[in-house]
Length: 392
Image (cartoon, rainbow, N blue to C red; front, side):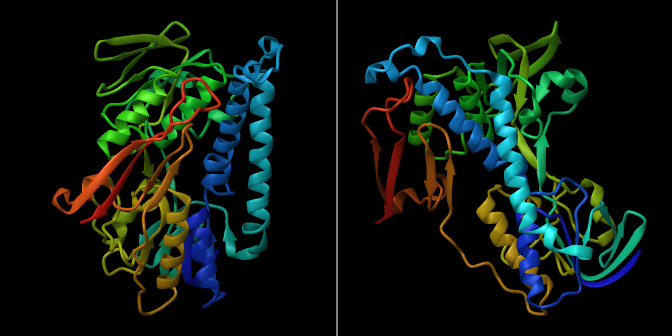
């Protein structure tokens, strides 16, 4: 196999697929290279199956509150975890099939299912073949980072988002290590599905909340459901059929741990050092955040591969920009947009606009409000604290 193409896109996730949409408007001489599972991270292991599990957990937890509405007999309701997990997988597979039907199933011979590595900035080794390209978009996504040695030490006692929905049953107890958006969402889901959960975070903030008042309120509300240990770095050790977890003065035996400390870009196997690009301390190529171009090379980064905060909207937008710039002579810059994100806990945690840590305190007035009103579940009687700020 020997291809000569205008653009090669590595990775068929949301960023890569949106890059292809832009490239197709300019040329039909392209290839989409994908060495992992098709169907996008969001559909396979991310927001789609996670939200199915979240809805299932909410329904399960609501049975405790039904008597207040006059619905009796709820004490006899039980969750069958095997059926519940099958339900999540069934819908996950449907989402993946729908994504494939509208994307890669239509691409044809331009799709190469294999892993790629750079021989130089314009040459890729893909399986046993060579792809010569005028420009390349790297949209390889990211994977859960696990501290060194944990996989070998814990084996199947450790779960990550890549494998949690493949379990046939739920563990009796779990320590969720890392309370960013993924960890805090899954911690609450597992708790509401009947798993004994403890959340551990090495810093003092959860769910990437920068505002200290909002963070404190979020911690107070969520730890009514399960314990949260902050400012403690977890140490793990196999013990019996489970894991002994230690964090500062805390110690707890659990059946499994759920590692959600961070996600790292899938870049190691690309051989980027052969392109002549400069890498940062995390192995991410230095690139222009406005055009996504790597140095002055004909290489562009998009989505989770950039090493930034991962979400579907950002990945899609970066994919479009990278695809456009890879297929045009004059690069286009990303237009600044209002940052927005949401964590699907109960209550939801939404962030819109400039981060608290980036505000000029001398040019801002603010007010913090706690949303009142009843909630459908015990432990979530109050809404999250909202910070309202404006420039003076």
